Image 1: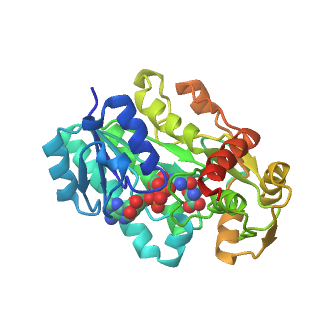
Image 2: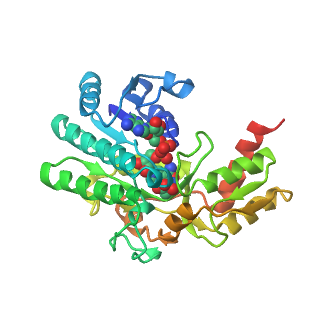
Image 3: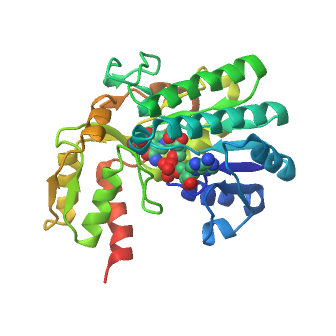
Length: 316
Ligand code: NAD
Ligand code: AKB
């Protein structure tokens, strides 16, 4: 049975991954931690630690105390926020990564650290972005992600640490709001629609980006960590994709269910320039072939589910 430590468990992914890992491996075998206090039913099902992942001794103490064998390192500052405070983006993203890898080396843990479409940049082929291609991102977030991929592969090859990772696209979910990324609009638009509010979109109408619904993202992380290592040709990190759309296309999909919904544009120049440098859609055939990645949700199915869940939550 696995003993798992999640760093950054309070965020958009962590709040749902915590519940899913506890369902699979047992409440007491998944230790949720974050810099911010964790409270609520998801977390109170099992052990909680307060860990600043930029402090290696705090991670090491928790790994030792709970006999951890797997670390899900989710602590990071997302793209748009990091661009406003690049040193914070670097210190959290890289601090948490290096500390996770070092503790894993010393205590024999496996490590999952998500990469992102942000690991690509303007000189990458943006349509059908290959698994192995040019990675020259123009953001500090992207620099941390490329560093993370390289360092994770280095720790595998040099020290035998079992590092695995995916390049997540923008993730859409309904439990915890996203933490300051470029793709956040694709979550916020559903909240606005469910609340009967007008949505002001920060990206231009033709901005195509890769996206994925959270259930498929959780499956991707867990299935990769459970995959037979002898089948993995790549490790850090696999392209994974499920759908891609522009703001006009998601707006049109929501309007099929809510004809009264309204959207206007007020383009944020920082987010727009980041989005313009990211893939329109990635080729994820390596993930499909090497460990059976197989997402279930497209834009239409996700829209039905999001509006159903949020509609019930915000109905008066
Ligand atoms: P998030 O911003 O929602 O959550 C990050 C969590 O890290 C927060 O709970 C925050 O309190 C915590 N944190 C920040 N500094 C910390 C520190 N020093 N010590 C401990 N915890 C700290 O982010 P997320 O969306 O859940 O993303 C998790 C990972 O997945 C990140 O590496 C992110 O880059 C990656 N990712 C996310 C997406 C997405 O769309 N959500 C897409 C691609 C990759
Ligand atoms: C962001 O927009 O920063 C994240 C990501 C795609 O990495 N959602």
